[in-house]
Image 1 (tube, rainbow, N blue to C red):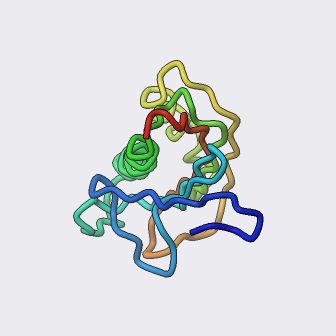
Image 2 (image 1 turned 120 degrees about the horizontal axis):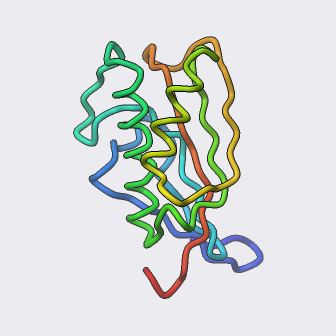
Length: 137
């Protein structure tokens, strides 16, 4: 695909994250920037478990996001911005602890947005923007 200005847009897809359930892709790259679609804590095999503990949901959603970043040739250190939508602001400290452990030294810009509910009754959804080295793909 390409835009009217000629910038190439490529689609990122991996079997290490769930297949899109709607009219979207796991990620797109344009001009060296990866945009990762919102990732719910759905297993890569498409299995839903909205009753799972919050901590397990965070690990799965972050794992899905990181799988798309990795599939694009990126790494946590290349992530520029993360937005996390969490049900219940009281979950923020637990989210932050798991996020820090999985992201390691990477500290991208981040927003944590408390929301009243998410699709399927999940407690978290995460999206991201990352810089992708064109030589890595």
